[in-house]
Amino acid sequence: MADKMSRADQGKEFRRSIIIPYINRFLTVVDDVILIWVALGIIGVAFLLMLEALTDFINYNVHSISHIISDLMFVLIIMELFRQVMRQINRHAFSLNPFIFIGVIASIRGILLTQMKLGMGESEWQSAVTQLAIHSVIVLVLVGGLYVYSKVRKDEDS
Image 1 (tube, rainbow, N blue to C red):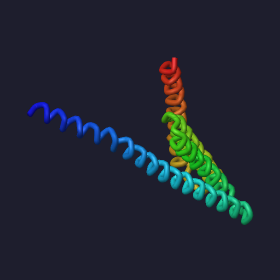
Image 2: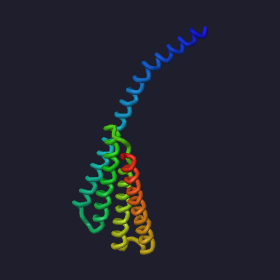
Image 3: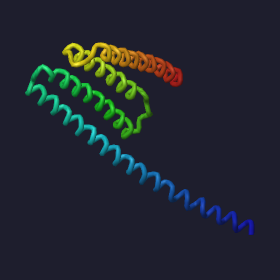
Image 4: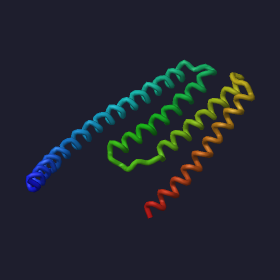
């Protein structure tokens, strides 16, 4: 009886060893298809933002400068996301660097837009300075985090 149980268990294990690789391959293909659709969507959004920046440039007025810079910086953020998706598609190791870069770009974008609004008189001085200070602290924290993360990764690679 114990011999039959072990044979039954062996049969289950044999079926698992045949089925699991097929399931893994199927899920990998599904993952790749979803990542490709995400990559195409990111490129589409970046293209639309570039078109919006171009129309702001063509229909130029004083307030267009901040919109153009905002759109272009947002395209940079989106393209950093695209790079991360491409790293996933190409099976590269996960890295926090693109996300840190996105945070730095987003905070610099906030600094530039706040400074422009302050310069054009569209923002109160006190709230603008507070926003500038917050974005500056975020940039410093992210750059410090990037430094520490790079050191830790270098030590892990050694």
